View (cartoon, rainbow, N blue to C red):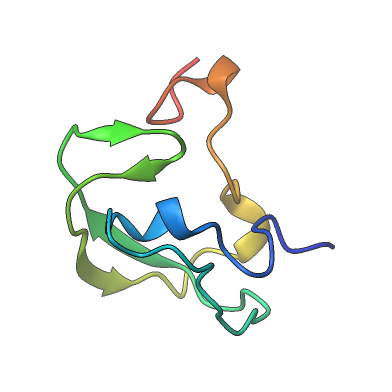
Length: 79
């Protein structure tokens, strides 16, 4: 499976207007599912505010959750 994010990340993805250069990062293979809390401020395939870790979900596999929320699924996975 190919990683869904480009390497490097566009500078605009960091949310810092002064950052002109792309943001380097290390791609890792998803292997753990966690539950998060997030507010409704979601746009351009990202949450605008910090998300909070709630708990690990050992009862779920990475195959059980989408890597990206598509427009057809709505912002929170509803159909």
